Amino acid sequence: MLVATPLVAAQEWQQQRVDASSNPDVWIKKTSELIDKYDNQRQFEELAMAYALQAEAYRYSGNESEAQKAIQEGLRFAALAESKVAKTLLKMNQTWYFLQRGQLRQANASIVYAIEHAKESDNKDLQIEADILHAQVMQNTGDIARALQILEQLNREAYTARPRLQMEFHALIGSIYMDVGANDIALTHIQDALEISREHLGEWDVSVLEYNLARAYQGAGNDKQAEQHYKTALEISEAINDDLGVAYALFQMASMDIEEADYQQALMRLNKALPQFKSAGAHPMEAQSRLSIVSVYLGTQELDNAFSQLESATSVINTLTDDKLHQNLHERWSEYYQSQGNYEAALEHYKTSVDYMQKVQKQTRDKQVQEIMVRLEIKEQETTNELLKKENELQQLELQEQQTSYYLLIWIIISGFLVVIIVSAFLYQQWRARKNFAELALKDDLTNAPNRRAIVRICKKGLEQAREQQRQLALAVIDFDHFKTINDQFGHDVGDHVLQRFAEVAKLSLRNQDSFGRLGGEEWLLVFFDVSKEDAKNIFERITDKLNSKPIEGLPDDYRITFSMGFTNAHPEDDFDSLYKRADNVLFEAKDKGRERLIITD
Image 1 (cartoon, rainbow, N blue to C red):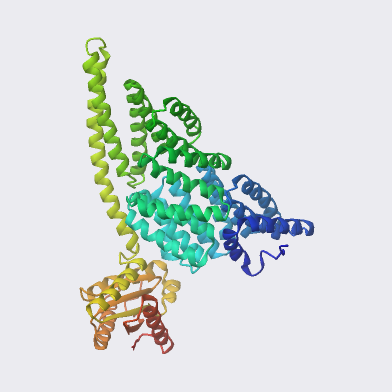
Image 2: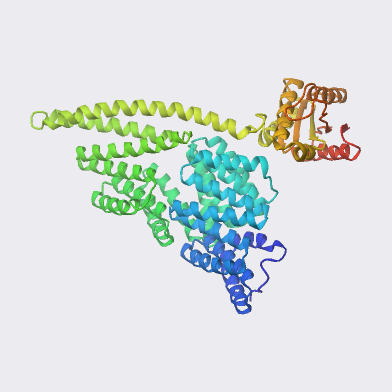
């Protein structure tokens, strides 16, 4: 018998969400008992929270229809109780429900309400979670620039130690980089998210990240690793009875089967996945599954079955606003008519697919984001060449009988030439996009200095290099003295000028082999090779002198900026965390002893 325990006391609901991730069926039953109890006692806030947790548990089990029912009931009681936390959680679950069904406009409206309620709740972690989900919605709508802007702002201003939020941040930014083809960066972020989930979160979260990691490996061409992680995701989803998670894994494994021309295995998996997507109302995935089944039937030359699935896919996709799905649909229709020998119809659908491709690219260019799938473009070029070849053959056979074939051939030549130009431009833009996104991931937006992720990575690599080459590595942590006073007295813009000046001074004061980066706020990390204690003192004094060598915009001319610095040498057994902790401890010692000083420890 499950014991009904309060959901809102001492923020226990956060841990209960983690527990529900590993045991959704248990928590569906448990929340049903809690709902009966709170309903009888007319405890509306507790009732709303119980519905919020139940909706999440239903989502973890893949039961989207029941999740939506729980959301609607919960919102009713959250309104009665004026519970901002419950309203936020329920609206976030509602956002996920709309995203799953491809209802992007409704998802955007829902997350806006969630953000408003989160701000009213004064719960910082809940605000961060709502903002991350907002970035997820922006990604799904194709506004990658806005999604990255939200995530970068969170990275600068809203650091949290809560594992769920760290996981969601890394998982989403990894997914975005995967969308733009930067699979190396994507893998790093998703692996970070997976490690956090394995240590701190529930099984559902782990299964989702195993699935995303597999997609990243598949995108990078490492099918062996991809298959391994898809299998792990499948096993976890089966263990927690997440039918929708099972369907996602089967769908992706079927896509690999199709690439290997294992059509029988692919069809078996797709036939298991498709009913789950239909049952959950996951229309985009239902459409993708049907298009994959079309590819199977085209591969086995079962054209009647291919036609039937194409009609069903068309019916679903026409209800959605996803241009990429429309592009894929017309590609399949083109392939179908090629198989029938109807090259005129094949060409018409191919032209439509190119129109959708150009529409997608125009949208992304308008948002200053290059979201190009190189393999798709290569495939488009191959398809163009194949159509051209077959049309040439057709023209040779029917030249004297069909005058219109002559114009068709001219159109194909022109179309092929234009597509070559477009693909070449897209490939160049892809190279630029990868370069820009790689820089974005490692640069602090305010100061253009390396950000937390970059300087920590530099330090970790430096530790490895120091052990391999028998060199001495040292770490310093710097924190400004009375920085809050500057912000409060002169404004945050002036505080930003101070941070920008520090970045300029540090770059000029350090040797080429040294590195620095902004950890966040006014805290900085400096990494040195082969530096003595005397050198550390000189660096401290040099930065201090240069920092105050000329006025900073917004500050009085005689205003003196000071900082405290903790310095330590690395030991052979140190990792980054132990080294940073030691330097941070002596930084606090410098603060306690009066600030504006350097303290060195071994």
